[in-house]
Length: 483
Picture: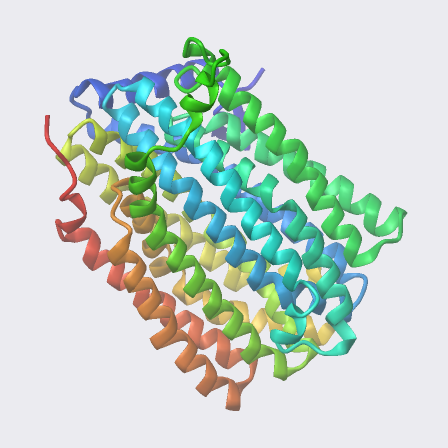
């Protein structure tokens, strides 16, 4: 049987997996690695993550296409609250990374017991965090569409969709935390396979609820909720039971009496403080970046239902271009985190530069494809000619920003792995609020949605330059203690 997927070596192949595990031990043991070995390791870790990221986008792509065939009103309803769901997703991700980056550092230092200690505490802290966000989201679901500038025409569908999403937040947090822990331990395969399975389940569930059960927008939300519940359960099993490095069964007396279980899971000041130090800047960044996305939605909303739908669909299509960058960013976070924990300064910087370079090359190629096939991609999303044409024009503007967008995405993954989150967050916030929103507000008055996307392209290019300057400085490597 062939061990390739469309000509690409399959990450399921046993020898490839063993080689990747062997190269990861090189980091922890302080052994020298050739340039080819480093490149192979980046590719082996990033390919499953890229495939999972792409499958996720395909899931959203198909979901949006299903809703798009219901009509412009239903598409606009989901598009209206989309930026808020991304904001919440960013908050749960920040909590996960605050703990999982610590796990990567401990694994790089060959201290697996300490890594499991961080894992246990993360389960408690993230559960409390996600439940608090869940309750807040439920409380605001009725008013949110109006706060975002939506009209009565789409408010009912938008609030119902957001309510179901709110109920899914704890499962979203658990799935993200477990996946992040596995990836930081070097296991990209299991989270990627499970995410791909989740996408397949989501499409099946959505088709049933939207078309068979006739639930419309509510059906799209229900299908996604069920897919997340199943995936979160499987991800938890593979982390807590099957993981070679992080399985909690390896610690004796895990479920003993006399309060021993709670003592092992009770958050401690040091670990929580480190999690806040890493995650708080990321959380603040997501809040303000998500807030900026919401403001951007409010700028688009007065442009009409066609513009709202075109903006939402174009964002989904553009995600196909930048998700490979996020896959490489995840690999960079793992490799930089473990190399930093092992005290290897030169290897840390080498992984950083190679990952960013690869990201820029891949996303440049994807940007070319997006420019060439923008009308066809939008045509899959919606049969409405006006939405398709406006979305395609917006995508072609954005295509020119993809190389620098890649630099920002992957470099941010590098900085997260190094625990350097404050300054990158400040740079992102300055770029978003001072450049994108200012330009978007000014250009939307005369050029409509095309003006908003022009502002986006300029801002992403500016942000990429800022991150490259930070990458080539030495400030982000100050936490490395050479051994």
